[in-house]
Amino acid sequence: MKTCGSCGMCCKLMHIPTLQKPKHSWCPQYVMRSGCSIYDERPAECAAFLCLYLTAPDLSDAWRPDKAKFMIWSGREQRRLIVEVDPASPLAWKPAPTAPTPATSGVRRPDRRARVRSWRPG
Ligand code: SF4
Ligand code: SF4
Image (cartoon, rainbow, N blue to C red):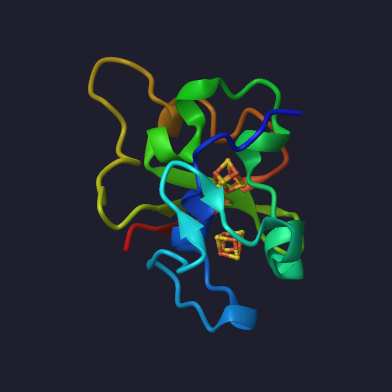
């Protein structure tokens, strides 16, 4: 499976109740370009989270959330795809006019049964 590398986008976008971390703000435990400073003791919800970039082998490096500026994950019920857009780049999900982008070419590819039901541009 792919690795997160220096991504950390979920550490910004996700609400982490255990840490009382609101969504869309960097976790105070995240060290830029390094990663989680409490990795071995990170909350269970952090340890359990896998975005689609990690789990879908056909998503190229361009889909890594810190590069694409959006993160795709399946909800708790695993039957929908949620595209969580970095509020610093609110238009990142929009398709380019002439070329396929991650947003247009692959959202449905990893699991054709899943449907895009939520867009969270901000
Ligand atoms: S958004 Fe995905 S690739 Fe990035 S740190 Fe989180 S789980 Fe890893
Ligand atoms: S505790 Fe670590 S893994 Fe969890 S959101 Fe913060 S930096 Fe990310």
